Image (cartoon, rainbow, N blue to C red; front, side):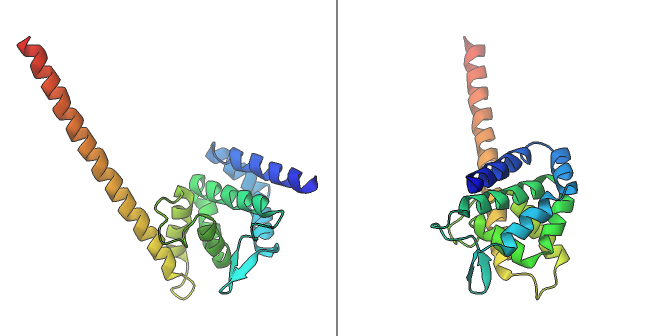
Length: 173
């Protein structure tokens, strides 16, 4: 019951962080970032290759940990200050990348908050602290964004051509 309550409370926090910068700043000012970060880094998560991972699927509090990570990522999307603080915590960044699927070679879409954290990490961390795999995530996101922009431009061009053709038909009629 207590675990279900924790999971639900973290879900409410995650939902709050979807809305406004003010909510994120208020939550951060009240220690939510520190509390969730501590829970993620000092809980009983798995270590793989020396890097912290979410608890295994069989673990009863995995969902609460996933929601805690999602809350931090949402806060980083809204608040550059939060993103900068999270970016300087190397084990946390590894965990957030893992939660977002960044360690998967076929992952194509990343959360804006995660990208913000990685950009801050690139600016804030030393080359020794910064993981080259994070550059892979940033590169994939850059390519995805370029492809989306190209598709949008093609869509607009097609739409404009279609509108001109309709306009020409109306004039002739």
